[in-house]
Image (cartoon, rainbow, N blue to C red; front, side):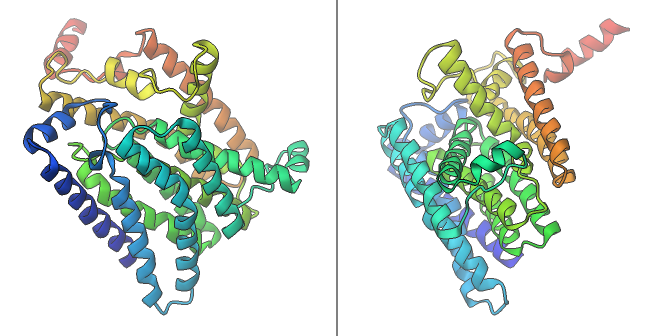
Length: 383
């Protein structure tokens, strides 16, 4: 717990310092801060420290891991080594995200290449390769070393980018990452994998330190660097958990990360096939955007900064609940491949169904947040 708390404190203090420096450099800091909190999507023109919350998370992880060097516990050196190798592997994609946060000029191809390089580094330094899928035909294919390397790099890079896709509202990506990391920590505890358990909980501590300043007011954004770091950290831990523990089904990570995975795959389908545009180009048609625009109706019609910030903050809990729908069965049935496969299929169907209902303005009434007087009116009409 000491090191988790250290990650939280360092992450909070560094993030707070980032915010203060950002506001100090602004000509009208009060106005800039209020305007940024009011935005419900990240402005393309917003760059610099205002969207570099990942720095605090990275600092929290680094300091917490280095502090273990002075711990005489038997597993402390191994935990430190694995954590530092994870951070070192994440350096290329984290740096690419940071450059994008400050310049907004780094191409999608370069960032994807950085994610692939980071995944390859993790595989080389930690042996984090996917070697089984519990599907007979596919297991024979993935057993080929070259295929295993390419498949691992592609999946880890894909999950890394998936977290960048869902980073659209205050507390969204950080909250989703925390839920998934807690699921990883639970299963790691069940199988006695101390290294993965410690790495997962340390990351949760660093995320909480950031969330204290990000949710609900949005004083700082996670940014590409932070989203990439969290997605990469989770992806590699899942590969290690499955490889190091044969009793863990390789379908556990799929169901555990079902929300960001579905968001990524559906976005590629929607952009690349339906709209025939570049799959990597951003848009405002993600599920979290639809939830904001069509379900979260708290103080609708008022575009003053405070109500807009409230609507922003109310969007993330919808996706936390959706994430939990995948996380809960995953941590219960982490050994049962068949059950996990069925769960993945059901989640994908539920995701598509929900998206279709919302986009067609046919969402069930109980999904919609409304003003108190509207709820009272509905109740009186029923009576």
